[in-house]
Amino acid sequence: MTELNKIALKIISNGKGILAADESNGTMTKRLEAVGVPSTAENRLLFRESIMSSQSMKECIGGVILYDETINQTTSFGKSIPDLISSSGAVPGIKVDVGAKDLANSSEEKITEGLDGLRERLKKYYSLGARFTKWRGVYIISEKYPSKLAINCNAHALARYSALVQESKMVPIVEPEVLMAGDHSADICLKKTSEVIKKCFDELILHKVDLSGIILKPNMILAGSHSKNKISNEEVSQKTLQCLKNSVPNEVPGIAFLSGGQSEIEATENLNLINKNNKTNFIMTYSYGRALQQSALKMWSKNIKDIEATQNTFNHRAKMCTLAAQGKWSHALENK
Ligand code: 5MM
Image (cartoon, rainbow, N blue to C red; front, side, top):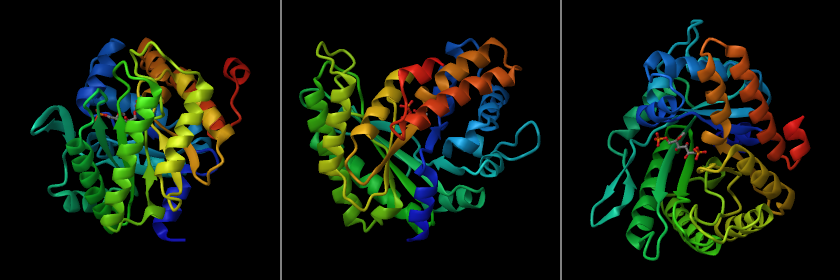
């Protein structure tokens, strides 16, 4: 077992999952303003240190993805954020892409940037305590999209990023997110997501990335958010498993899904069914942003000093997701 494989397994084994708290300041500002809290560096830290000090950090969360601002912050009780995460037994991680920019010659699509100077930034993040990283490519679905161009160049960037991250002794999370927006069917999502993931692995292999030392972070297979033909949760799990079984090499230790705009319950129920029906060797867990933090953020916004209520809400959500990562979740437990 390589060191990278050990780190990956530490993050995702035994029902543990990933807290994706890597919202850039722009996105975090939208999230905070939506619940009526001013987006200051102090408030962003207060919410994040509250949930990152909760009990479920020890029991449910194997890794936390941070944003550059947060990995450099010190909590109000004097610990650095990476130390706070490590002291709960979880692994600190960092988003290293600098965002999705318009793709030249296909301006409705995006290419994720951040390769320039990445080797040097990785050294700095390692010294701050990070042991894994994240890079997200985004793809839209329509009749003509994602284009071959977007599929190829995002896969190339994800592979170059992964190779550099492994060189720096950290585990890359490879996140190709096929967005839910649109009126497409689940079968179109299945076809296009499979194409995207397969191309990512072609490039990862070309770039000699050690596949046992990565974590894949894909979307689930869903009908578009405006589709009239929604499918059942059972079908979501079956199609998602079909996609991954056919496009992910066996060496990959685990898959940590993004929630992508699903509600907290939907994302939990789908993950639970995926695990119940999983006949592959892949660990299937969560790397949720919104589906882990939404309720906690709402609760926190009622009284930003009431840390206990915020933590209770977060603990419940994390516990439900961890049960789902083991196929042990139920509606009854949700409402207990
Ligand atoms: C937490 O949100 C991340 C993106 O932030 P920016 O758009 O501000 O850079 C995002 O990459 C996230 O990690 C994943 O998409 C998963 O989040 P969801 O909310 O889809 O589970």
